[in-house]
Length: 538
Image 1 (spheres, rainbow, N blue to C red):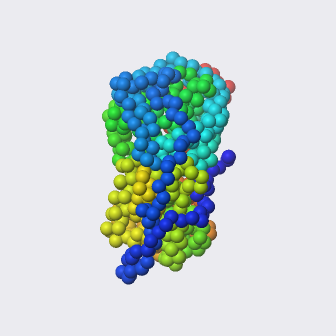
Image 2: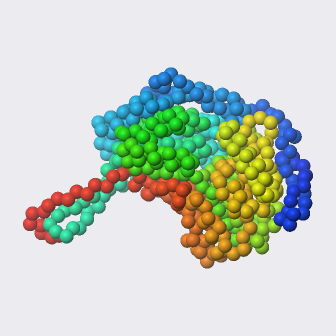
Image 3: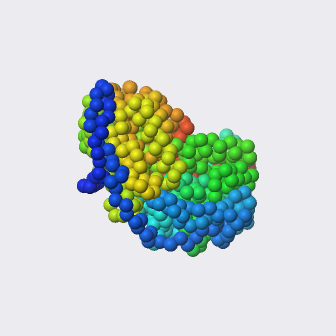
């Protein structure tokens, strides 16, 4: 799998739309017109499908052993389909982070991992990737149960991508080396690329296993040891995967997993004096706190992959049907819980009306339901907090004067399901056009020309990604160079090859994940200068 388009699972249309009713909505001119919306009250109540997996690991993994939290505390992880408890998980805090960091420090300073050959490290990572592949069904089921994402998405796309990324970094392990540098004088100069030490990593809940791989893969390939804190909403899959890593031959203490909450376990990791490097993926506001804690402790370097409000630009020459489908997946994939979601859909005025009508129809035709059910495109939001936040954002859109084309309410009566929602007549100063919603909400904005859309697309505190839909090479080149973002997808979206770097401009973070660039996050560069006596040449 040289390249994987994460949105391919969502490229098909489904014949059965959710029931809808007709109500009146405002047009741009102020005239009323018919708008079709979901009727959530008519959705049949079905018993949730029993997940095809059991929860085996709920403890912390420290120094190769499953252990309870020092306090003995646990917290519930919930099924977003119902809000019911899946399992009670060990609640790590400061003392547990201290134990995990001590284990990682000892494993780095005294253990075999950074001292074995890079080829031996690569073989262990490859064995882990094989085990991960063999356990795809179980891990995908844990992801779906804990997170709410469609099982088909997890099993057919995300876990294979996770496997691919670990194999990619296994290949890098024995290809990391320094340079010989010419100097002005009788000196031999070389640079060494050394592992940085103990890496602290904090991963989010929207893609637990993918983010696990983006962080752990390059860190281990470079010879570091790791303490990773999982998101409190989704703690189950990472600890399962870490156990497989030890089965593959990973030495004790090299990879430690702590479940817990941000203000306790996360803050302890970010501010720990024995952590040499920190990597965080999450919201921009939390990223600021993480950066401050790191700077106030030991000035550890920090990689931040934060929020976004990505523009998806549909140009005048677009095939509208194709553009609608691609923009739909760009924003609704993973229940809209994607940092690079193309949630600001800019459409040229010449195709705007046609686009809006077809985008509304596509959203109404989106398959929503139990994520374990075959053919489902959209499951529930991850938890009640996210559910309520999205509904508040939708209400804000209505109150600010945007036209609610479809959706706008919960889907069904149980769990954290939200109707796929489309707004038109969205203006740049509206909250739904500026703030990260992180939900299944598409905001459609109209533009006239390239200069205008460049200015408006860049008028955001975020700069994570953008999409361009055009058949004109000059237009694509103009936009791709003008947009202040870390990734630009042209006539595609959400293409996440293991070798392609990912990260943001502005308040979307700093540093890059994936590819060769992420190796720099976990290496120190040392210059070694040796005086030469009577050299034959310089």
